[in-house]
Length: 133
Image 1 (cartoon, rainbow, N blue to C red):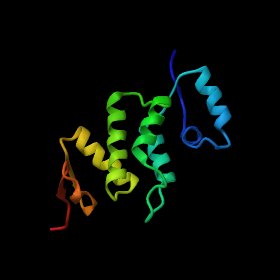
Image 2: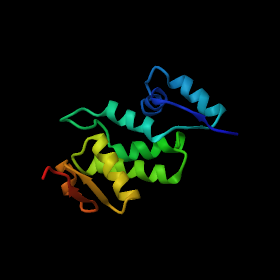
Image 3: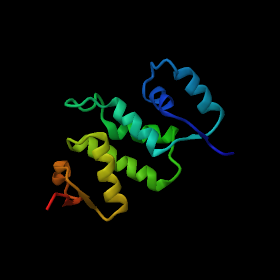
Image 4: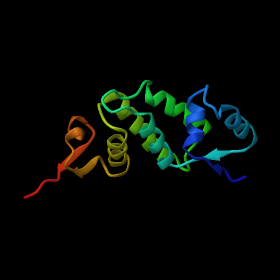
């Protein structure tokens, strides 16, 4: 059976037991396999993030639990997402910065070209500065 694609509201209902869609999501999970994309998880992380305050929860354990219920299409995508979640918990990065760092470390030998100095504190990432001549 092919998994059904779910979007961001589904993830929020998985993450929040008191969400207004929790019962519907539980019914879907009991009936059919589902999966989603990195884009949906990125949207979830951005929506749950408060600039200057970060997250009200530890991201990595929540994301790992969510992946058990709402997987990504590949193990490589799940590895990337879990790496991003770890960056969010362990470093002061925004969700997109964490996803970029995770992409660079899991798929590009830890090399990233960019101007954002937020990556400079990551020991497993080699940022090559992008700056005007």
